[in-house]
Length: 243
Ligand SMILES: Nc1ncnc2c1ncn2[C@@H]1O[C@H](COP(=O)(O)OP(=O)(O)OP(=O)(O)O)[C@@H](O)[C@H]1O
Image 1 (cartoon, rainbow, N blue to C red):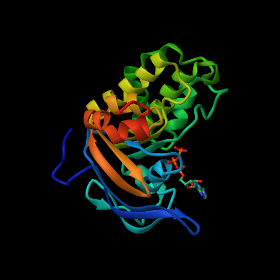
Image 2 (image 1 turned 90 degrees about the vertical axis):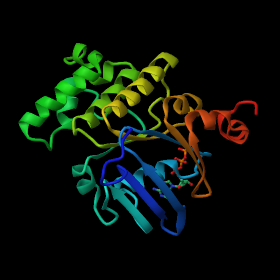
Image 3 (image 1 turned 45 degrees about the vertical axis):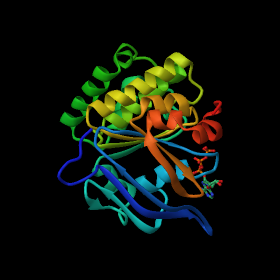
Image 4 (image 1 turned 30 degrees about the vertical axis):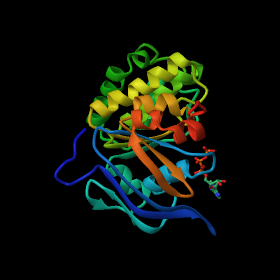
């Protein structure tokens, strides 16, 4: 993990956001360092996905600021944030099931110049060798876990600094879940800041440097992954474990 001279990779200050007259985020404060994996947990409907969408600019900030590498991006549209290296991997998988794995990767990098596309594909195959093996196969014929890896690899094409990822382990076998969480740690090892939303909070916290609980639109608890796993209130309320 590292904090550059410019400060954290991502910083949220008193962020308020929501939909129509519904305020969902009510003063979120959060700093995320390069190379750090932070897992957001909370009840259904607490606003976890809204938080990711707000960082990416899909939901408008009503009050407060979003900063990326020390630059205030609160007023910037998603495309501008993307150019700053913020990517989002939404819930669900495989946008282009009939296209091959490699064609999907090319779609992930369609805004890039040719040399960066080649570098991106090289990076994706190095990180996920299974995708190289399957590169000529229709993406929709891969397992759910492999499709999830492809989604992450598509986001990797853009050489991101910040990856926002929503429920990456949803519907995967325990073995594939482990693979996905390992991949997130690998990304962090490459200095990407990862903000992760997960229902599978136990495994996600094990894979995270820090966890935070969102409650009533605010961050109610922050701690290392281990502290959160040991916290009796968190165990009872969010992990389904005995206190
Ligand atoms: N586009 C939208 N328009 C209106 N309300 C929305 C919209 N998207 C989400 N909401 C509402 O905002 C609240 C927070 O939703 P969000 O998806 O952020 O929760 P979450 O914590 O990710 O939930 P879950 O764990 O169930 O996925 C919910 O009450 C939801 O119904």
